[in-house]
Amino acid sequence: MQLTNLKVPAEQVSFLQAVRQGLGQQQGLFFPTLWPKLDINHLLTLPLAERSAKILSALIGDELSQEQVAAMVNHAFTFPAPLVAVNEQMHCLELFHGPTLAFKDFGGRFMAQALAVAQQQNKTTIVTATSGDTGAAVAHAFFRQPGVQVVILYPKGKISILQEKLFTTLGENITTLAVDGDFDQCQALVKQVFDNKALVSEFNINSANSINISRLFAQICYYFEAMAQVPAEKREQVVVAVPSGNFGNLTAGLIAKALGLPIKRMVAATNSNDTVPRYWQSGQWQPNATVATLSNAMDVSAPNNWPRVEALLAQGVISRSDIEAVAVDEDDTQLGMRLLAQEGYLSEPHAAIAYKALKRSLQPEEFGIFLGTAHPAKFKEQVENILGSPIALPQALAQCAAEPGLQQDIPADFAALERAIRQLVAN
Image 1 (cartoon, rainbow, N blue to C red):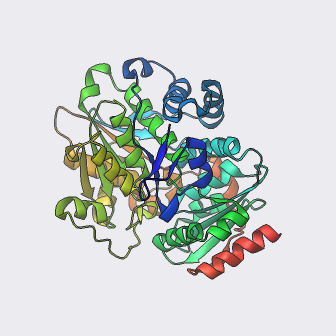
Image 2 (image 1 turned 90 degrees about the vertical axis):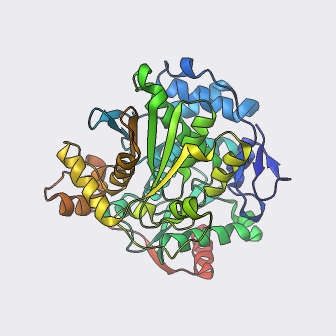
């Protein structure tokens, strides 16, 4: 499959080239212009790993053998994604059963496999920004991987302590930088790195955000896993609500729909950083300054993946009516968590936003799914304060909670980031 740079269409690359580069010229995102035809009914009868290997092999094409892709998937997808009923009409797709208790484990672990193949033993430096969960997923996916150094930027004081502990306590080939700024500033710094061609070449720099096509492709697979768990007679009425920050998750769901998965409608649920819902109403793209919220992983005002959504619309494989955009404020986020608790379901702010948006959207005959993107214990303090009852830490969090953080503080300044990268590689 050929992938096209959405900003510089003349730049066309293969899947492995896109994995190696991360971004194209002028910070352009790589994206397919053609989509394979899939036998959806057959795929939905298969187990998660086998089905995912077939989907990813169809997307990647003949650059990798089906056996290679299957081996990569079997190594990456070693945990389930159960669809759990909250009530008769609404269900949560739980994507937090991987090693770092967040949906990013799917994309991060598959990208690690893809990059190992793409780099062919060459040394590489991963530079990525996180608003919460990407950091842990990428850090654990690449921890101790030979020939890979990882640099993770995150907004200091703007993610939960337990989110932070999951990736700042590893050390070795994982370097963590606490940036005095918000996530959009972290993301802008990463883009500046990729604009510096000499630096990229010198250190063979790549990124592991959802801008990397391997991560995005991996995320498509759990939408198929959700549909496989829906009763066959309900599959034409499925509405999926996605907590949305950088919009990789929503893009993956829209790709799944473009591939033929019978999703009736996607609901893009944002917090108060509501650039997309406002754009959907007015047609004006006007990002505001990012504000800190309970759902910190969604505190993004300039979502990187939105050009891919626009590309799908331009290709005609999805239409505007396939997307609903809903903003959920802080009060409604807390209300959503309490309503879920009344249903007997423990959740956290990101999933609660998707749940509230889904409640607003869902019609009586429809089958609702909202994405549970992180384990509630990753937001232990917020959940306990809002719900008024303690929650236990799962083992993965309990093990790192008492470990010292190894992060370095830096200003939101490119020169400081470049010094940190050079110091890392020099050591």
